Length: 316
Image (cartoon, rainbow, N blue to C red; front, side, top):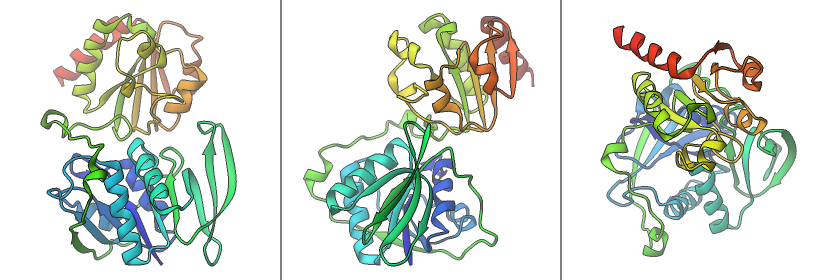
């Protein structure tokens, strides 16, 4: 059985969320990756059991166009006879697969943690509902299963033996109507990680004090090779844009390290950062809820702790 997996890239390498999707995909059949980029991270994909890669020429699709990407996946699924098409449960993964479901008329299940073929055209699956607070068991009956993989519930595990990969360059024919919505990434941001795929996230909450308080957090994030995330109150106050919000109504993150500065840790925020492998909290309140979810905590003023941490990192 052929399985297609949309692979997102982070600085020319597969994003961590996509590696988790590939790990689940291996249990369903022979995995072919679909990459919308000029560079193919062949070695990394081989370590995760990918046997084929469809490279979509950048000249054909410049930038991110969700409906066009979905149209390409629909064509490849028909051409290869794929039994399943999946992606990571990121903003892009969920959006593209939703378009694919609309184009093909097939059902799509988002944020799955387990998918098991059940003979014929049936798959049994478990997926997140209510921002991960509930798990739903369901049965999908469709000639091609469409689903995204929960980014915080499936560990990325490499294959026992790297595979041999066959690379195919695919030149799709895309209608102008499919390019009506398109985002072209600015060169200045092309190499930066997104909030959903970053390995380090420095989070700021009400305790930061205001827009100017994020300057040292940005400096710290740059030193650690990460990005800045925020709590909902920060976006509500208009201090930072919504795209940086971590939480139930924002982005769910799965970094190696989440450094939460001045964040109390409401349940909606924990729903977004609970997938982090390590959480360190900096807070003046020893009773802040986020401390119960943290591996380490610094009880102190972030306006003193962060500059001291930045200085120590620069000395090293």
